[in-house]
Length: 187
Image 1 (cartoon, helix red, strand yellow):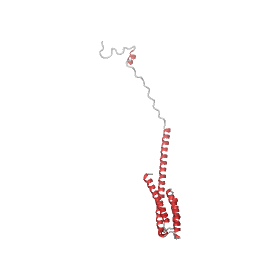
Image 2: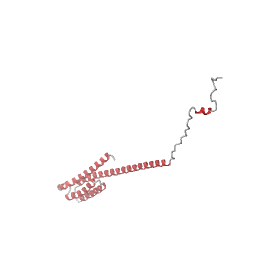
Image 3: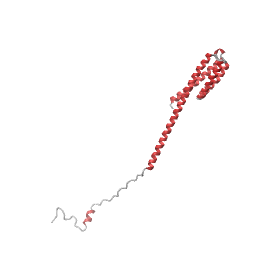
Image 4: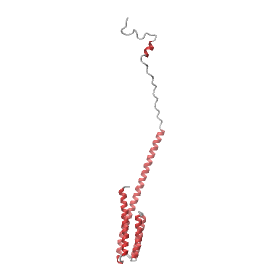
């Protein structure tokens, strides 16, 4: 995993947390104002509880739980707006924020799934490479064990060279040898 991907995922998580926090702040500030804000205090308190669950799950990188909490917030918003505790204008602003948070959560889930798939693929490739290496080592070891041992050929025995002068003396015992033969013969 590269630093860029890791940093990008961290940035998305921070952004998601900030959006959820902004939603919580918007709902909480509305409960402090007059009824003209389009949100009654009791409705604001109910929505705050839902927003807090979304924020906590998003901060813990528990995206499926954050989506469930967001669905609960959406359902609660529908309930409090149906009985008039939230104005239509205020409901639309909150729905816009919910939609943005839902998109961020979906992107975070997709990024987590992609990272998990990449990690799994990398682990499988590493295991395959390790297996190939072990197989190659075992094959090399088996080849060495099955190969005929190399025995060096015996060197031929060395016969000592005849010493100089011995060859003629042995022949010449009892014979005249070379005397009187060849050029320069006297008589």
